[in-house]
Amino acid sequence: MPYRPRLSLLAVSTSLLLTACGTSLHQAPVEDRNPSRKPATPSQPTLPAQPVAEVKLPPGAENAGKPGYYTVKPGDALIRIALDNGQSWRDVAKWNNLDNPNRIEVGQVLRVLPPGVDPTSVSAKPIAAAPRIETRPLDAKAPAGAGAASSASSSPASAPVAASAPPAAAGGDDDAVAWVWPVSNSVSAGFDEQRNKGLDFAGKPGDPVFAVADGRVAYVGSGLRGYGNLVIIKHNNTYLTAYAHNRAMFVEQDQVVRKGQKIAEMGSTESDTVKLHFEVRKLGKPIDPSRLLPAR
Image (tube, rainbow, N blue to C red):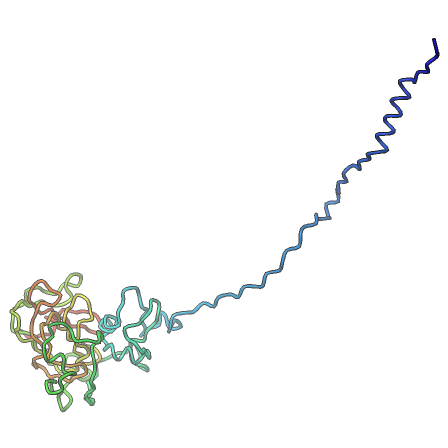
């Protein structure tokens, strides 16, 4: 039987191991344990800096809180601001250079006293006569039911005639104003500081309404909600009077009127009943008219 050499088991194992190591060598992963070195990250594109939006302050904001100025609140209208401060809305618009009096913004600060007037020493002064100026209500249209006299701009012949001389308005003493009653009707609701800021007079449609003192018409129109067709008369720098819910009005803005002159007719505009709602404002604050009107 011929001799067959046998390879030792150890030799075969060693040969296979060397062959495997020679054909496929794997490098162990390297871990960087240096804490000061940050891992590489993909480069990011640099974004341009965004411009900071400029904060636009409302007109007149630098006067906020000063005496003689008013900051507009939500729901405000220029006619209401003027009435509450004892001024004509046209004057307020002029003092604040308002191109459109119907456009005021919340936060806007308005001058409500004439330039140069010390708000701590406001006193009554006479109203001087001035040339008559053709004006329109804040609404820019005649109020419904105001009658022919309120559309005088379209019919010059029907326009009421302004007084040719200045009225005998009060001087520096408020008590010198000569007051009369606005209607001959009896009072149906008295003054209440919270619920009724004037006097109410019941009546019939067409009952006459009279100016209670000499003065100048500051407003004619229906732009003040809750008052209907409204006339406001400025008697001096202290007193305004307001006549609301009229069915017809017979005066124009800026017209000089005299005590006892018929200025409107009673109606029910923005009211459930025919009545005159009458207010007296002293430096813009409603006061009880019965304190000023003569005894009956």
